[in-house]
Length: 240
Image (cartoon, rainbow, N blue to C red; front, side):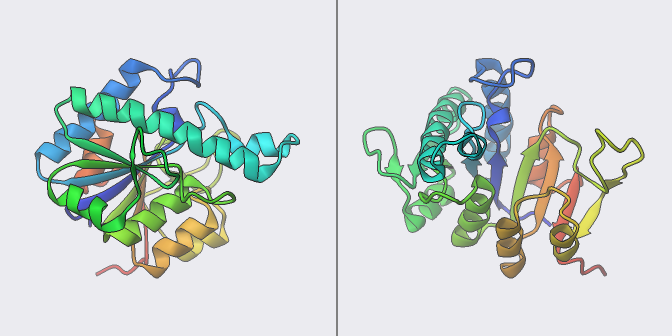
């Protein structure tokens, strides 16, 4: 299923201390960077979209009274901080890396330029996409789907803290079952928490498979990039 080029979606949780749930933990970043560097050394092309929830959650703060657009811009800046932390981790792990942002911050990162991003990937560099789409009201899930379509990726890999997609919330439904495969339409209709509807629809329209997996299991990021059957696969549902 997975080809040589993938977009890996990392939430802010991928940077935080597991117990605290916020901030940037150097050991967590190093472990994530190490797995990415491992598969890049094998010849895979990896682009990363980072969230910022470990620093600031725009949507939840907007719900508490803050202007939504302003909160979203603050969230975008939080993703830039995470992107720089991941770049540092990747370079320490021996992988070349470039950060591209949808907001112009030329002192610390390149602006997002599609063809330049593709060229970096072709040269074996990891490309980290920060600041979302550059627009408020769009999630980093949608950013991952958009960037994957733009750069011609073979799949979107969503790293989470659960094993994959369940038939219901396993925290409240002990009998919930883990799904190995799911088609786009069911993911949208049943609202199983894969990604937001805009992101899933964009993946469906561009025939981009989505794999949702547990990033806290050592080796799972590398397995997902290689196309191994971890977590849940969401695609068009066409089976031989």
